[in-house]
Every structure is written in C-alpha cells, then in structure tokens.
Length: 186
Image (cartoon, rainbow, N blue to C red; front, side, top):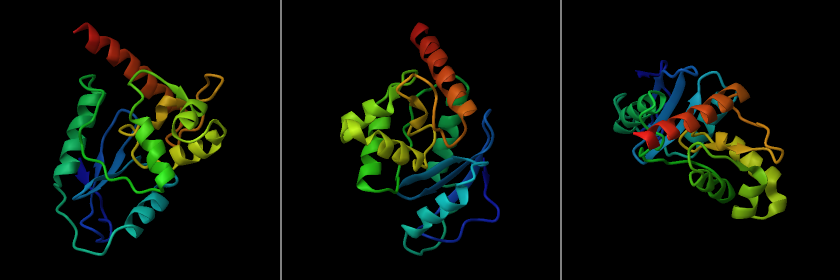
C-alpha cells in the first residue's frame, strides 16, 4: 500500500492509497466514517468517481496516509487474494442515491461464489422491471470487490457490465468459487 501522489485535495479527512492486486493496482479512499472508494486504477471513470466523493464531503484537513481503514482494507484484500478470506469487515461509507444504496446493500447479501441476475436484484429491491436501473446503480458502485457487483450477471447467465472489465469479473467469480470450496474443505 502506498499513499496517492499527488494526494487528493483536502476534503472531509480523506486519505488515499494504492493497493497492489493480481488484477492490477486498486485505488482506495477512506475518511473517518469508512471506505469511500475501492476502484481499479485503470478505470476511465476514476477521476469522476473521486470528484463525486469529494463533492459529498465538507472541506477539512486531510487524514494521515496510514489511515486505519486503509490499513484494514489492504490487509483484507491481501488475504482475499491469498485465498484466506471472502468477506470483508472494513467499515464502508458509500455515497449514492437511496436507490443506489439499496442496490449496493443487496449486493452484499449475495454469497461469495454465487451469482444473481439483474432481474433478481431488481425484483428484490424495487420491481422486476427495474433491471436497467439496477445495472446503472451497480455501475455507480465505487466499492469494487467489497460491494460485489461482479456477482450480478445477465438473465442468460452471461457475464455483462462490469466497470473493471469482464476479464476481472470472470476472474473474481472463479476465484471466489474456488476459495469458497477450499475454505469449506479446511
């Protein structure tokens, strides 16, 4: 883990770090309430995501780079990628609309190694006709892996719509299924 350079503008005690992963570097941003962003560093929408987070926070002084939430998520991701964990305990502080927050809360109920369709998610949180709105909400999820939008697939069973790239979505799903079976056998 290393501090982002240049650091993010001071806003609401934000702290940021790069976290290495087998899928490429991940940018993490946290404040005292919890983790605000966990995004693959090569995502085109990263600047917009950072701006959206900063817009929701009052100006304040920055936190030190060794913020406890960043240290915790770095450890948890290291364990996740080392096949030692599938669930996360780092406090989250997502920013979104009430509908987006409902969509993201649902994502955290999907067990690792399992998938649901956008239609199933829509039927659970809104109405079966809202699958496109659910897809948009999942696309606005700034907390990759820990709010697992990669576990949602198309009605046909095909992998669709993952901001980190379909190759990462496939890798994460295969990884979670394999680790889930390994952990159950221990």
